[in-house]
Length: 400
Image (cartoon, rainbow, N blue to C red; front, side):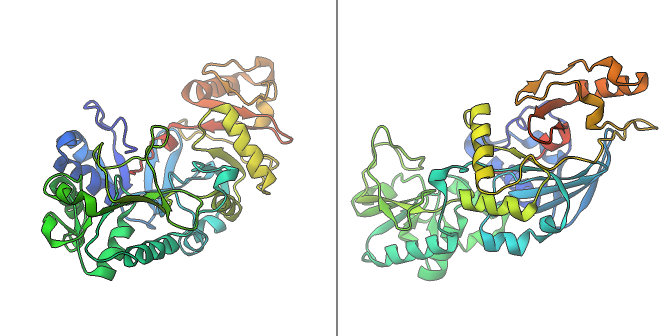
């Protein structure tokens, strides 16, 4: 769950989110381990519909025009378009950028002049170049289920949000509901009453399960086939053999030994090819990977790989000036005012002094205020630029 920090009772800021995100947070009261954990923020939630712009007034940057766009990741997830006096920023959060999905749902990002793109780079690796599309995965699943007699029990390992489409195709095709725990049933039905027709708490009514496989379900383990949706590049369902070095995240209890376990190729994140397509579709002037295990070394590898794939990362010079809406006569800050700073691929600490002889007295004070307020990152490239990362971007919330 990407909602760290919201459980702190002293949290008192408005939370702008999608309508489903708000319902999920409120629905957490049905999960025993999280009951009342987020009750203190219910009144702070500001649910907003997808594809409908709204305005947030900020002290530092003036009015910001915000639009939540679909992300094709899980319920509540969204791509966030932020438009303000300093240009437009896109924060994808987690996203599955299937080509048809992007073309159908994110056209506004192609039309906009995007200053900066914060993008999900979870699988920005050469070994994750292609994931089959979700629709293909669902057809594979249906063919696999059809290949077994109907007395076999199918366990769909939906251990987190994002696999609901699997439930939908099963109910549509086999006319049976999915057995889940009472906690999960209550949570989903609080999000949308439609789930009352999709899910059930009666294990005797169906051979399809996404429960924790306790009694009475567990008596049928020898006839159970466990299906694990996994982001793999295979085009076919593969058998899975658990080992100490290869354990999948799962709702199944430890020690459970089903008839067989298989991995269904199914990703809720973008493949390398989809990351490249989305980048070229948006055409941002600058770019930040949101996921980089290994910190700067991995970030440099991501940037190098995307450059090799034809993405223009650093060869676009920023001409727009960064302005503050906090003061009556906002002072503009352009890169030529800070050319005395050494450009490196490291973070410049807060309160970093700027050479006074480069600035007028008034400008110097205002620039230092920016440095104290914000984290500053500088990259070395053919076209050097300064990126000021503001607090408002980091306030974006997405549920997984």
